[in-house]
Image (cartoon, rainbow, N blue to C red; front, top):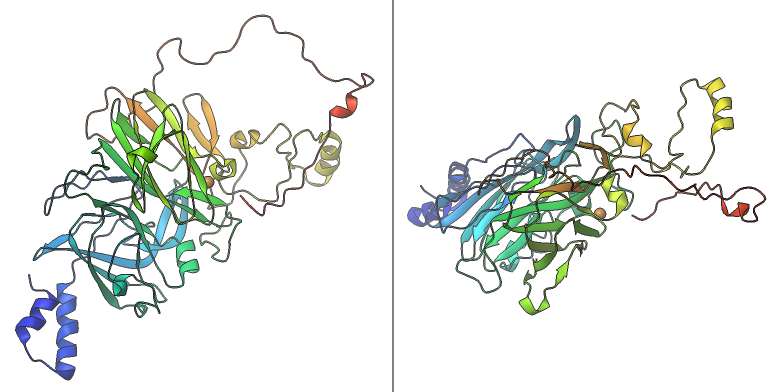
Length: 461
Ligand SMILES: [Cu+2]
């Protein structure tokens, strides 16, 4: 296989226009065939067949980019391009991404690897790629205008460096960053340690995903890129629950989950049924003396966290952002809080004018997950997802860790819903109920029962 570098070396003193023509033709011929993905499914681990061995990660609703070895250099080809991302079944978004999907494919290498990444720009505007968190020569840092010229449309640039530091990283443009990240341009990067590492344990399952947020009006397909705070789609790897796959593990597995945040706000990521430790950030492995058990860890803007736990409790355990607005899907943000408001009189009046007027939210918002309300053509219900016991009333940044004793090592398939052993599920009390305590007019505290309509201008989530 001839590389551009070798060709120039062998060609000796070629000059001027001849050199330019030769370079571009040979460079094109030397480009690795770009791999592309059309599906939003979780691809199994890509076991390395060249280079140093490692235990590969699994990207939630994503995939790992294949490479080719070229004289000891790992070569990857990223293509920045418009993509159609299915965010949930029946809901598609027109995003920008890499190699057919948003986020782009995960890149996995080993500490000490020399990597060469060809980046072809098929976007309508210039771009660049920044290798977030990594030690690279300054000119490879991907900040357009500062460390390189922007990659113009239909041009290919080459980044080349040694992956010096093992850890959890990401990549994203550093050119028209606001628009390009709002459109979904980002990807995960994992550098595995080359030897046993005192602070990096080997694990049985290693999941990765990015947190991202979009503002797509119900019925439309393209994110609004000027939005700074008022996003309506909170996603794991550009998917919303129930479109997010579960993380399926074998009981007793040591599980690592790596999360990067490229939204405009922080996300307290929460696990049920287990305690995890933060074992590393994009700054590197966390010293053992600085680790403690948590069930929630905050992932700040532009930060990455890797958490680890032993999955020793069987079941379907929720794993989600703890900001309750982030486990909702597209909603009209100006929906007032209607809890406690009695609509009976007003509804009579309205239905005279609008016969199918529907009241929502009188008893809380849970009604909305079961309401067969017609939705605009391309959107997702606000809260949804059916479990074995009914509606989950969750959307957005929510998934589950499914722990099973009979999940085979290396098997990532969804085992279905957990079958609870008899007598281990919360049940309805069948005995005598005490009378409800309720304030009544004249009792002196009637004014405690307030009928409120709260203002709901969300400026911050
Ligand atoms: Cu969140």
